Length: 153
Image (cartoon, rainbow, N blue to C red; front, side, top):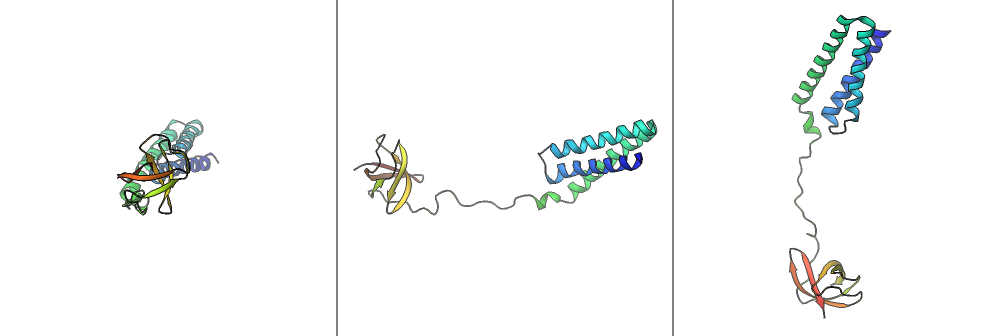
């Protein structure tokens, strides 16, 4: 009975450690549980079967864990989980920027950043003159790096 318990604890521990390293790195919770399972299996083996069986169990757990790591890293399991796509778009690419001189109406208070409606589109704008109250007419005076600067008309 003890042999079966030791075997199950050891296999569970090794499996959890391998899952931690290869499939869900960084969580540490699964790896800690796996390490505890392996440690308990080795401790129980020492207690019930003596030093020789304890060291054999320890060697088997270290060797099996090492082989599992080696095989897992050689099999390129990382390629199934790695992100290989890159984002080519940036924020605001699809937004139609207004032209300099266009007029609009503030939807919120600009302190100095807020929302204005220009050309029927709501967009984030920045005031050149400090605070501009809500429902004030503004004019686009500059566009720099997709940032729209306005002033009171």
